[in-house]
Amino acid sequence: MRKCSIQALDTVFETIAEAAVLYLPVDGDNGASYKKWEKGTVMSNALNTVRSPKDFFFPQSENLMEFRTSGKTIEVIDKREEKEDFVVFGVRACDVKSFDILDRVFLNEPCDSYYADRREHGTIVSMACTRPVETCFCQTFGIDASNPAGDLSCWKTETDVYFQANTEKGEKLLAAIAGVTEESDDTAVKAQQEKTREIMKKLPLADLTTEGFGAGKTAELFNAPEWKELSQSCLGCGTCTFVCPTCQCYDIKDFKTGKGVIRFRCWDSCMYSDFTKMAHGNPRLSQLERFRQRFMHKLVYYPENNDGVYSCVGCGRCLAKCPISMNIVKVMRTIGGKADE
Ligand code: SF4
Ligand code: SF4
Image (tube, rainbow, N blue to C red):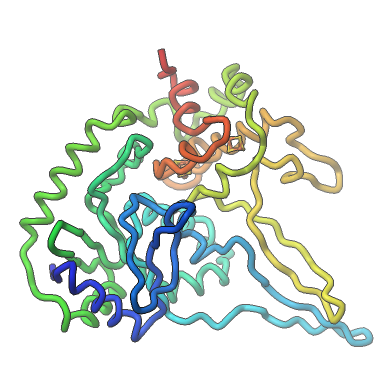
């Protein structure tokens, strides 16, 4: 483990930015968001960014390819941008876990090479949480907010920042900042972890469990009468899916430019009425069906197909952002048999 003083963190950023594009969470009028580092950039102390860092690997929209026709021939031009190495600093434990969930979707055969390219070029530097809030429930999914994964893990105390490499990429980054850091033991980190774990135990969602969900629960839960009431007020706005670090639905469209056709991909939402619209019609005609799909996917279908791993990391973004205050916790408490009194 290595450390530097908080005052030396700017030099660490400068050193990292010499070899790769560095992104930091930065405070703004609408909360924290990731920005490219430049001299003077101040890292946010916010618990998390409003939008998750999934954009770095699965952007909201991207051009995939271009088609140009000449007579009877079609030229296909790969629009993939040459990717530079980049470092995403300050990713919380929940969001780090979301990359594993996205990997299982995009890196499985057939591998999504656009996503894979970005994963290859990106290095994740995580940051342990010290002030989890009432909307946090990462521990429900076995995530330890005080011990984040990532290529390089960080802990920030009042005086110092501690670094520990977990992967080859992390080792490389740690070696690059060796001149501005020094060897350290983990006493301060252990003390901070203890405090954070104590806070986690007292949070209002500390007792939330995945009991009642998981592989093999489709028959039991699919026709549960509770879906009707739960979904009744859903506006189908898709906000929950857009802020979610693990949602991965997308659409692919062709756009005529005048000189050819660009094929692009953009995020979509299973909460939208036209998401499953096909030539023959739409298999999910009601908001109840769409709403149920989102939560059944996260809590039953995904774990069924992914060794029991749930497709939620308890980041709490949907709890904070849904305009009607509906969220996965309410679904879990109601359908999982732990409805609020
Ligand atoms: S659950 Fe909330 S955020 Fe999600 S689509 Fe419905 S109204 Fe919008
Ligand atoms: S469902 Fe909600 S709490 Fe779970 S990962 Fe998505 S935004 Fe976070």
